[in-house]
Structures are given as C-alpha cells and as structure tokens.
Image 1 (cartoon, rainbow, N blue to C red):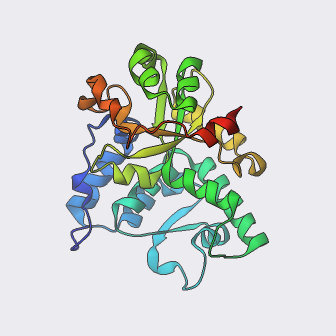
Image 2 (cartoon, rainbow, N blue to C red):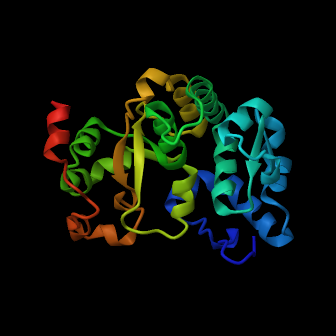
Length: 260
C-alpha cells in the first residue's frame, strides 16, 4: 500500500461519522495491512472470508478479457487490488454478503443475456451505480418528500431536527473511498429503506429481498450531497452552506414534470 500514486489505508479517518458502521471491523484490518504490508486480499480472506459466500483473491486471478462480475459469479472469487477501492469493497462484502451476491447474480444474468457491451444497459447501469455509490436511508416521510423535491433548505434547515430520527448508511465502496478526502460536491445515490431500521443485519435482509431486476432498472434512487447531512460536516451548521447551487441543485422542470 506504499506504492507511488496509491493512497495508503493509513489515510482513512475512522472517526468520520459516515464510517461509524464500518469502524469496528475496518479499522483493525486497515491497521494490519499498514503494519504488515500483507496484500489486501489476504487480510480480508483471513479475517472474514470463511463466513462469506465468496473468497478474496489477488487481481492476477482475473483472466484477460473476462468480465469482473462474471468471474466472481463463476468462481466465487473476488479479484482484489491493494488499494482503498478494493479494501472498502471487501468491507461491504463482509457486512452485506447476501446483497452483494444478489448484485453479482443480477449482473451475471444480464451479461449472459446481453454480453459485454460498451454501454451496460439500464439494469447493469443501475446496479453499478448503487454498488459503487449507493446509500440506504430510513427517515420520516417529510424528509423523503423534501429530498425527492430537492428542496434542500427544507430538508436540511427547516426539518433539521427530524434528522435525529433518520438512519443513513453508505453502501457504495467507491463513495467510501472518495470520502477519505471529503469534498462538498460528493453525492450518494440513496435508496429509501424501511423505517426504524438501524442495524446492518436488518438492512441486509430487507435490501437483498427488495432487489428485483424490473424495479431496479428504473434507478429508484435520490441524489443526496452527503456532507450536507447534519452532524457529518462542521461547515453545514451554517444554513448558508446549502446556498451553493452548484452542489445543492434544484429539481429541473423536466424532472418535476416527470414526478407528476
């Protein structure tokens, strides 16, 4: 992990609020990689691999010309590089193993039907978006109404006290990787979860059961600038934080018409 151009796992701030669900497992594994220089796949496999439906393998196991998702489905082996992206992917596999396996199954089925194309197609695109950049949010209805309307002032300022009743967990491993160096424009693609869910085991069972190809092809997600979440970034205590229209963009007229 000390190679030139690769961000080391030691750069992760495990005190960041979005990493709270991942810290108990992730922090000691990151420390082990940093201290021993063991490959990421070997650390993940020895720590969590035995209880998962897949194992972690070196990236070199992926044959040239073979689709990544198809290889995982066919072999039960996840090619893993020594970087932040694949480390976080391993953590998500460890906490959401059945959901990740379901994602992989749907990807493999689409590949079997459509083959590898330059464009993924609606279903594979939606699955990839959620896998890389997704999040789950359980929240009171007024927050969801404001989020879907992209009424940012109402969502984050007027209704701010309601966030104490919300539960948000980041699922996308690319999003977790990007947030090692947080920037205001970072956006999650959020799926509405059942109310009152606050344990990963419960999220896992619900999400895996809810993942149906017909519904997911339409991308049932809402964009959420994650550093706007109350308590997740000190600067958002100032209501003026949300006045940045380059980040907190209003719903376009065509989008509003489509919602009617």
